[in-house]
Image (cartoon, rainbow, N blue to C red; front, side, top):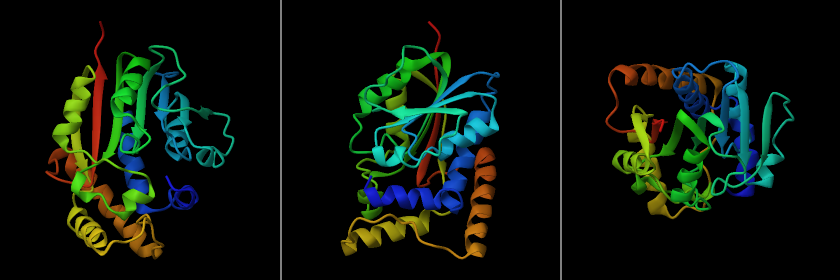
Amino acid sequence: METAEYARLAEYEDWYWWYRAQRRALVEAVGRLRLPPGARVLDAGCGSGRNLRTLAEDFPVLAFGFDRSDEAARLWNGDTDVRRGLASINELPYDDEQFEVVVSADVLCCEEVRVEAAMAEMVRVLRPNGHLVLLVPAYQWLLSSHDAAVHCVRRFSRGQLRQLLTGSGLCVERIRFLFGLFFPVIAMTRVTRKSAGDAPRSDLRPLPRWLNEGLYAAACAEQSLGRRLPWPFGTTLLAVARKEAG
């Protein structure tokens, strides 16, 4: 990720509708696992640590996280209820079978990541019957100047993500799209910006409070609807997969 984007991320992720909606989906997915008190949860590529902090606040778990970037580490606020460090997802500094859950949001898409190595490492540190919860961007043709700014070089189809999970020895429990309601507008914006040859810059822009809250409410409604009637498309894929015992 470009250095300037870390500062922008820290500025936006507490209040911006898209980050709040994505975090809500992640927290809900972890909540459905019904973790026992003291379960160990790892955020692989935690960035500024906002998702990790929410998991530690919402569940009685031991929260761990890491990121490879010094810029990300400068944003950590010194919370004592989470354990963070500098590391690469390609080579995790943890022993085998340490965690009940590994979560990772928008990390496998990054150019610094060796996808097969990263998947093998996340599976390695999962305990038997532990779960991997992934968020990845969807559709390679949606790559744009936003992706260039955050060093995203790959986006995934649903089939590719399923194959990646099963090929890593995991049992897929569910894969679903997020932000399907917003997909037409986002897709049109990305394609237009790409054809215009825009310089690398994320899509984050200031929004009026009423618009930001309205978009967040719409995203929450979309997620609720998507649990009963899954969207056939979206800008993000959420996957939950289990490491089978034995």
